[in-house]
Amino acid sequence: MSLLFIINPNSGHIRRRPALSGMIQDFISKSGMKAEVVRTTHPGHATEIAAKAAAEGWRVAVAVGGDGTVNEVGRALLGTTTALGVIPLGSGNGLARELGIPLSTSAALRNLLTGSPRRIDAG
Image 1 (cartoon, rainbow, N blue to C red):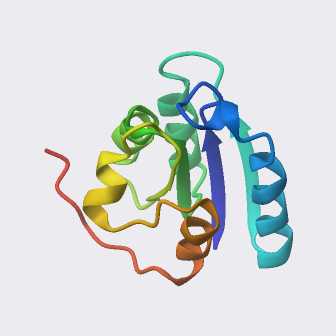
Image 2: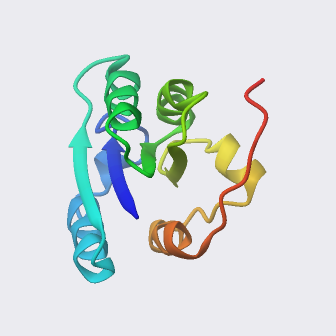
Image 3: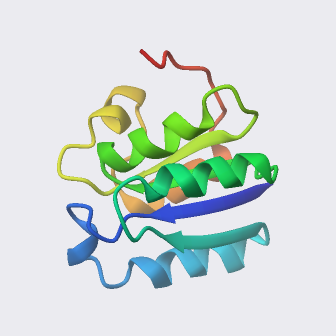
């Protein structure tokens, strides 16, 4: 499996989580999977990164942030075979709550390995 983590550094709780990068890098090294981390730099950048990930055949594009980041990443993945992963770090995390994705970062990371993909309505 290949995971591309797309981090929105301006998302709600990320600014207060200086250990986040280390936690994700530790997860990547322990999982032994092909994985990379990319940070967004401007609005719409997560959509650009996710679209490129899908075109390159990444298995999962992981939105690390809030509902806005999830929206940007998910929008780019519609109609592709790349799955959307979520590490909820926004102020509300509405979609993660609705889908039962753990709000704990470590549990959400584990969920990437143990969870099962499912289709959801894109509205």
